[in-house]
Image (cartoon, rainbow, N blue to C red; front, top):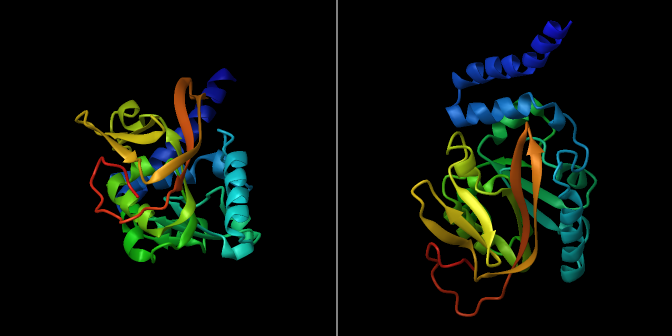
Length: 260
């Protein structure tokens, strides 16, 4: 009986491996890994509001949305939210389906997600680096990046886009694992280290170079850090909100100088 339980426990792993190999024939390795993760992670099986939120970030995001409603005096679809790299089952989707806000999710795998998972009419194909070209300036009240900013090819280019499309007084919400690039040995989509330092989001790469990613153009509203268990490992995680500040005589953005 114990042997049967052992192999049943391994079934999820082998099923994911088979799916990954099938997808690998059509997609690059990182994309195939991402599709396999979403396809065979039971925790993400439903659209329940923030059900995927085992870090309890749901209440934080709800509070941020309520603050935005009060600050801008907007309700319903007039509250504009952009999510960078949502995957197919973002925790923001239920609020969007209920008409609490408008939602656009920009993801390189949007077409694949919609084909396999459905229900994602808010999804739009594109990389986070493209948002500054896709959307007009001052378009969104909130930009949300949950465990995705460190997946982007160029987080600095993403921040240039955020600085353009986020309204003054709007909020950039970022959450994810601390230094995930280093922790995962720079494998798959994890090509960057992110962490919070001196009220800013810091960025590091595999060469050891460190720069400010979210800095002077934004004011820290809230930050929270914790440690959670993941398959026996202790993972450090952060949640942060940064409000876009008014900028007089906007200057060209340079890497590492802070964005606004």
